[in-house]
Length: 157
Figure: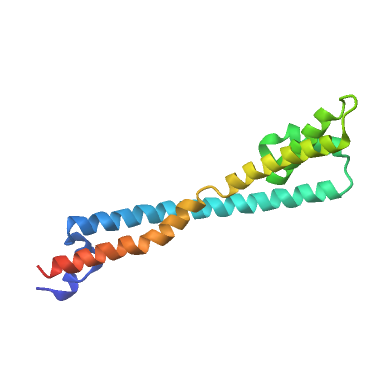
């Protein structure tokens, strides 16, 4: 009997019970999913930050707001979160402005509501899959412990 081959990682996995193999497979799959979501989230946030900085430069650079709005509408597929919030508020403001006798406070309130709704939608997009990552982070140690305990119980048979 060769002790080193019996204690190799592959040998231990190969000789494990079906329950332990399933637990290890589950942890491996969830780990790959977690890393996928982590990298995807990192790239999403990195792109959102760059687009936000560009929009802030354009917005505070003194550009005409109508031109900025038209640019946002024409390049909708490549705009950032802040630009979509601005677009929603400006669209609502422009819709209410031509109405005769429109109350300025109502126009501002309508634009604010549209911006708040778009802000919430953008935050939901940026926070997508974070609950999955939090659940995996809190549950994985216990699933791994289950596999360990099952393996130890199986070894005493």
